[in-house]
Image 1 (cartoon, rainbow, N blue to C red):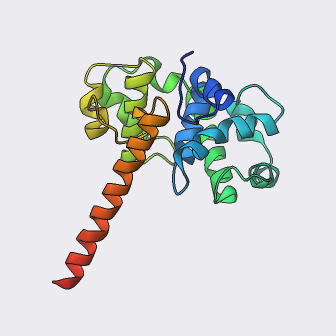
Image 2 (image 1 turned 30 degrees about the horizontal axis):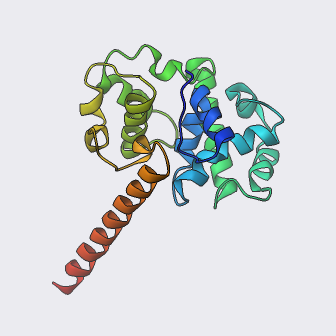
Amino acid sequence: MDVTLRIAQDPDADALLGRSPLAALVGMLLDQQIPMEWAFKGPATIAQRLGADDLDAHEIAAYDPEAFAALLSGKPAVHRYPGSMAQRIQQLCQYLAEHYDGDAEAVWRDAGSGRELLKRLQELPGFGKQKAQIFLALLGKQLGVRPDGWQEAAGDYGQPGAFRSVADITGPESLAKVRAHKQEMKAAAKAAKAAEREK
């Protein structure tokens, strides 16, 4: 895997995401309750603080939990909730070490279908259906991982020409479109809640 991604909007962070399957998974895991580019810059920050060029699932899985939480909490913090996210990253790496010998790319390398790949992604700690579908769409749209039925398995996120998620971010312009879509969805959800209360 060696592609050019522009999700973090930071050349070094994006270069790591493009060459490291584990960094891409960790970025996706971090992508909640913080801006997308902050989340996807996280893997590069973690690697830098570990004094490494890449992330290693075995190393992170075996890291002292308190020390790893401290690593994510240092300024600037890797996430709004660095302690709980440190725990989730370690759980993800422990799962990869146990089930895939620490090889994150093995999650999708030989997946026979989009449905099978979605199932594998949903089995990862911290990956619910939506997160798994978004990552599946990212794999298909930008990383060339396209088993049969991948678009259907990714749901709305697999649609071509949509600007719904990180799978569609290829630069500042598409980032702005995705952000606008997310704001529209939030506003619609808020309006629906308000309408429900008025009934």
